[in-house]
Amino acid sequence: MTKIDYGNLDNLPWQFVREGITRKVFGMGAENINVTINKVENGNEKKPHKHEKNEQIALILEGECDYYVEGKLYRMTKGSWITVPAGVEHYIDVYDSPVPVLNMDIFYPLREEYNESYGKFIENYRK
Image 1 (cartoon, rainbow, N blue to C red):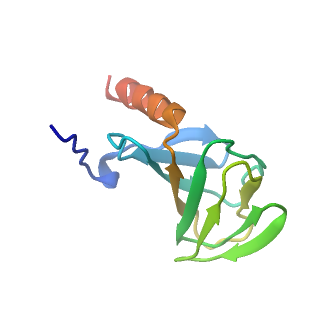
Image 2 (cartoon, one colour):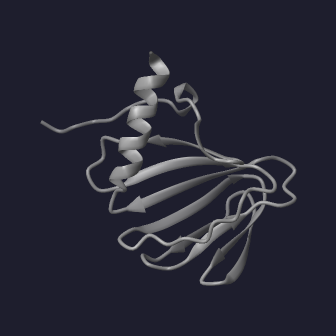
C-alpha cells in the first residue's frame, strides 16, 4: 500500500534549532526527500556547513537575506531559490530583513536525523 503523509504547516510547532533559528519539518513520510521551513531572525549566528550526502534547494518565502555558497554571495528576496550541491559549504546571513526570513529547504536524499529530531520534538510537544 502506498504511504501518504498529509498535514498543514500552520498546525506544526516551531522547533528551536539555535539562537535566531527555528524550524518545522514536514512530509516526513516521503522515502527519499526532506522538506523544512526555517524561520531565521536578523543577526542569526552564521554557521558555514556542508552536507556530504545531501543536495539542497533553498527557497525564500518571506524576507531578505544573503546566501553564501562556496564563499560567493547571492542576494535573496521573496521568491528567490538556490541549489546547493552535496559537499559544498554554504550558510544564510539575515542582517537587515524587514521581517524574519522564512525559507524552505528541500533535501535529497532525505536527512534521517531531521525526521528523528522533529519526530521526538513533536512527541514531547504533545505530552
